[in-house]
Image (cartoon, rainbow, N blue to C red):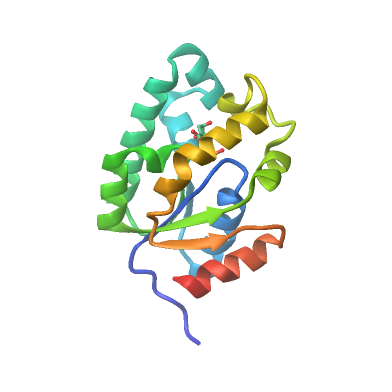
Length: 171
Ligand code: S3P
């Protein structure tokens, strides 16, 4: 088959540890479009790390920055966009994604998310209290919203290439 042309930005949603960045990079390669990590764009815009934004400005300020970054990126050239885990919870962002993109939820179970996020200090939401309990409550809050994504792909134990293949099949 010839090269695929991607008509819309693919927006990867899902919890921390679902593999949005790893799968996103591979997907972008396969689709011949840039990969953009929304968290990284928020950090660039703020001139500080996400952990520092949370610590000095607070979560609300982070969410506002995230909303603006998502709006800008969704107005830009087609790409594969890894959204931060909370980005899709913003109704305005969801509307923009509906208009300009295809949303793909990388669904993973709790054990996997706990394992994949263990021992990495850069996620402020998991730095207080028990990370498993926090992930569990985020699942309860967010899965009903992630479920409204255009496509759901199981991002289980298999390799990122397998998950990437599943996303390509589903697009
Ligand atoms: C968050 C997820 C993080 C980052 C921030 C908040 C969340 O992104 O945006 O720490 O609310 O789930 P990743 O899902 O890329 O880790």
